[in-house]
Image (cartoon, rainbow, N blue to C red; front, side, top):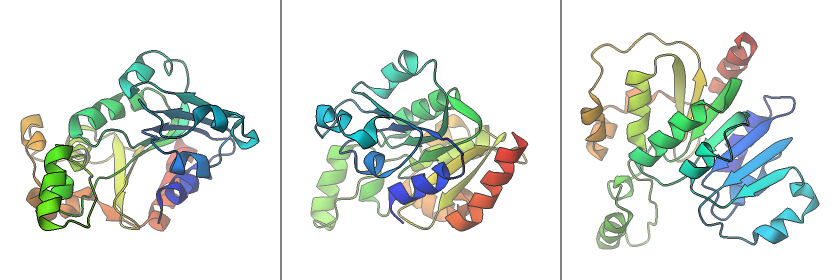
Length: 229
């Protein structure tokens, strides 16, 4: 299932959804989704932003060519969203910052979708993009996947955010949906340092902790959480 189809399925849960996308790059996902209000944030857009603004279908869209940290500290401080898609720099550190900032802009009953949380190979899981590329060239030259260590964020949410439920989709390359719903606190949580040191092999061994699910099974839970908000 392609990214925009997952995003659209989430947006369709709301009558007049507001959508924020962090890490827009070529705009493929952003421009294929439909919402009452859309905001795109990226340090460098890889498409003609002026031309995009002139398209009638983008009349409800805003484009901010700035780093996500800057957006959250200024431009995005006074707006709230139903769906927030995090697909920025593929590192645990940056995505953790984006996640913490996104929580402050999430409407009651809203959801956060985190991309690239289940790397397909060891090379894809490396946070250093240059090193990842060198390992890929030596092992799988035709595989260009780079997901970084974003998967560590799922374990961080599991151990330190029991007030939020989450599920990692098996419908595609691995995206994690997070929503406000109390879970039972994790017994024997890892330290922050231990989470920051998790490797690809640890993700494989502890794959069950990612809470793998199909989107069709998660949507009813989101609807229930939305009603309870």
